[in-house]
Amino acid sequence: MREGTVFHEGEPVLTVRAGPVQRTFSVGRDVIVGSDMATDLRIAHPVVAPAHLLLRFEQGNWIAIDNNSPNGIVVDGRRVPLVDIHDGLTVNLARPDGPRVA
Image 1: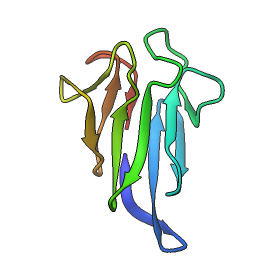
Image 2: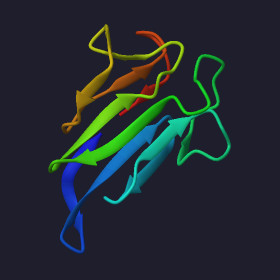
Image 3: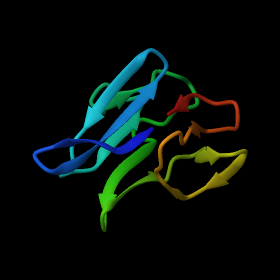
């Protein structure tokens, strides 16, 4: 994930990749990542919950938050409830070798 490297109207945006898909999101509301068709970034995989991960801009920083998914999020091989987003961060969904959000 790339955080704060691109600006739109003075606000930092977040660029996220999942497989071949890359999307850029602006500050203002939570970004939902999951398997549901209505999510902001859809990852169609059996271990991914319908609304698995939230990406939120809070107190000047982007954070990735597990959205009470059954399998959680994994960073550097460890399951975590949330993580500060920084350039180069990779979050795996559900397990250490699960779908990657970068």
